[in-house]
Image (cartoon, rainbow, N blue to C red; front, top):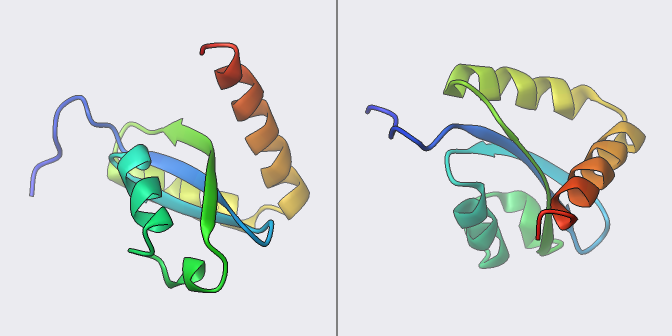
Amino acid sequence: MAEAVGAPWCVYLVRAANGSLYCGISNDPQRRFAAHQGGKGARFFRSSPAIALVYVQPCEAKGDALRLERAIKRLPKRVKEAMALEWQSSHSRDE
């Protein structure tokens, strides 16, 4: 299946209601977040619903997104929280 032009793969972080962070990849993070909120997709959100999309990092290709996702999952939570805070503050100025 060919990737759509103009739809780069992204790594994203979603905050769950219990405060934990979920890391995943998608070529449409907003749509994927909406699916998580609707209880579709990751089993992770069955115990604690998705409440906010807190980080999105575009990548050149799906393979790059997968590698970055793996690297982010290995980071301590405090580092992921800092990434989310930085992303949110940079995007709140854009609105």
